[in-house]
Length: 118
Image (cartoon, rainbow, N blue to C red; front, side):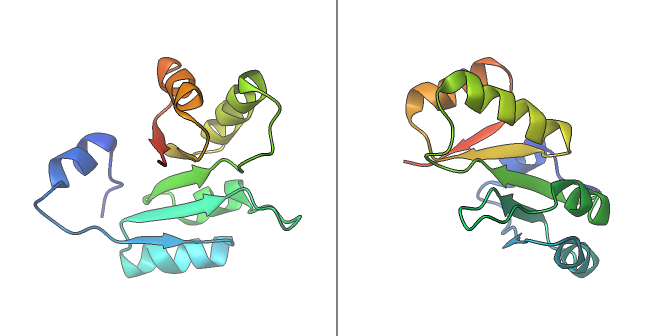
């Protein structure tokens, strides 16, 4: 199975169901890829633990990966953008963002694929 792209996701809308699983470890990511899961989600966590994003990407190189930006963690859009670039650099295909519309727009203006939450 080849990794989905954003174009694939838009083309699948209304035509096929996709699977998505939240993972915290590379072993979970590897199991999901082996099982044929379409998309993975990993997130910055508030419990003092951080997912191993590099390990997750290496364990599932052919699976679409969304990484969620932790809410109420960053001091302003500049810090959010810095961390967004860092997360894209470790292999995220898109970012999940629970911040407001101005922040989502700022990410989109930088051509960072972003999933908003309203």
